[in-house]
Length: 378
Image (cartoon, rainbow, N blue to C red):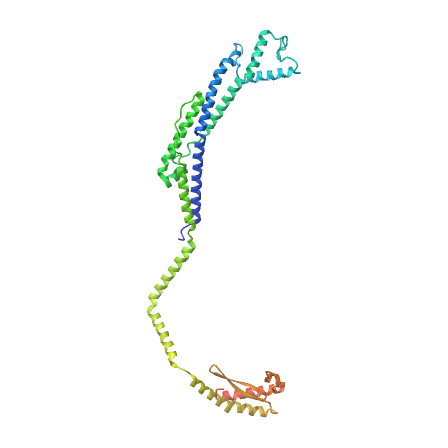
């Protein structure tokens, strides 16, 4: 239990779950990039491009080509005629004037008077710009180029045998490897086919994509999350505490096994002593005998001696010696012989003067000393 590193195992589960979610996202992204709707749009653009190309050949830049200019139809040529058109519109202001070019007007570049042939050429160029066939063709070409770039960006090689994704699927659901591999193989084929369609500007039928394997990955993620939850529910501290209590019990039993005879004898002795104590009965006669002996010794010895010495010290002092029994023992105390009833809790300390207190103390000390010397108990 102590060797179970819960934190490290939880981190491992989190890493595996995160990687599987990453694989799921990649598969979903590939499926989204190569979905049927994308290829439907691509086929539509290719078809339109083909149609516009054929139309451009009929009424497009071919009519302006000549032997002494090589860039007719290029982007530079297109930008040139477009700029010339804009300049002609600006020169034609105010708008009441007839649009450029009119008979007798000059060339915007060489400033020569336009011939009939030049007038016809410029008007055909303006017509070409208004129809904008070339622009449409160029826009569609740009669109096809962007679609090709999208296809080139599609990644289908992230599930190699040395990848973490491959290892995780192999560990958790090995039979699912073929599903993902077949899906990515079909995606790669569809990707190459789409790029070929764009390069050759043709549309071909495509095969449907197989199952992506995303559902199987969801199952793996759910299984790992459940294992992680089960691990978190375990409390190793509590389990270790229970095991330590059980281990202590077993150790005590081993000790008891070695000392059982001594323990048994001790317990039997305690039981016997308890039973004997109960059978002894009362000890009142001992207490009575003790009290009688103490009374004889104190009254016959200590009291007479104390009164004799106290009388020798001076005038009569109103004190006497009393005995008190308490829990099998008898104690003596010096009290007032006759105390005034009007004084509550009258004691020698409150009633006697300092001289009288000193006389009582002097009488008590030699009395106790003489009793000890004679060997009598008081």
